[in-house]
Length: 399
Image (cartoon, rainbow, N blue to C red; front, side, top):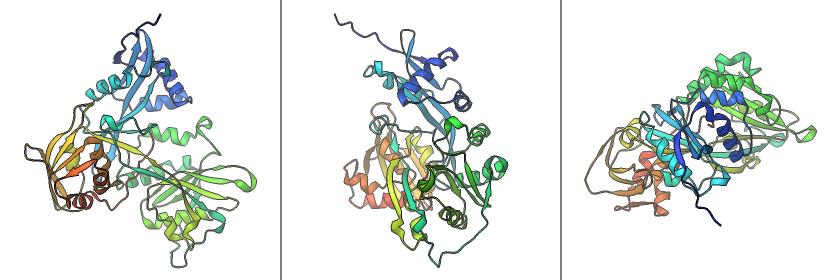
């Protein structure tokens, strides 16, 4: 005899729920996180920001958000609800747990104009109004054969240091980098503690190595043995082009290493520095930060724009009920955005607007896919020009 499943309950997570939450998350992601690491992330959670789905007294799902600060094009910083630790027990699929938790969690985001997440599965979050807004491009350079072009300068100024002994400089450089980079995130002191603790349980390779320049740093690990040693850069932040070049000169000069690997933004400078650009291979491309606008006028008015624009946007958001119709006027790089009843020039959904926001994706591409529909065939090109950014978007760190 088949029994009908009982309805799930969605409620605030309590302190006593955390052992069960940890189990559900570890089951979902296939790995255990160190208790000390969990505690660091918990210090970044606002009150009542974690919700759980329960079957009776059993926790079968979890979703929460962190208090983050996101840099947008032009250097303004927005409070962002960073959605994280989203998992549903495999025993309770297709029971409405995710929909219920997301509806409740987003009702608790009143203090935030924008929300962001990283998607473990790309097919899940578009329906909730999230669009991929940064791109991770994985590059590998065959180090032994790489040679810098003769006309590329050698700025020098790089030191080999122990990262924990130079925390103040690392924090200063990263803060300068994130304030000029769309997608940059403020790193609170407790999170720096966690990075520099360099726990063995968090490593996949050697302890951290660090190259330090006055305007940049590169932290990396070495993987493999003997002739097959590879360098995996965990973080490279360069505030100036000179610092970027100086760091890469040292990285490419690391003896006894086969490849140097880095996750970065598309259009990275490295191939342009070398006599043979083919030695820099793209080994993968993934989405990074996904964005959902919670307050469309506030978010659009926060960033700078590269071209003037006058347009009425009709934005749909079926599941969570955001969106609306807005008049967007851009003059001299700044936007004014208000609700309107005027006829729309552009029809699209909230996830597309999130993808356009940091400049990593083009309106014309969405128009070609019929996901952005315009009355004027020339409008996608004008949207491309307005939303373009001089500084490539890059997610500050994973959360």
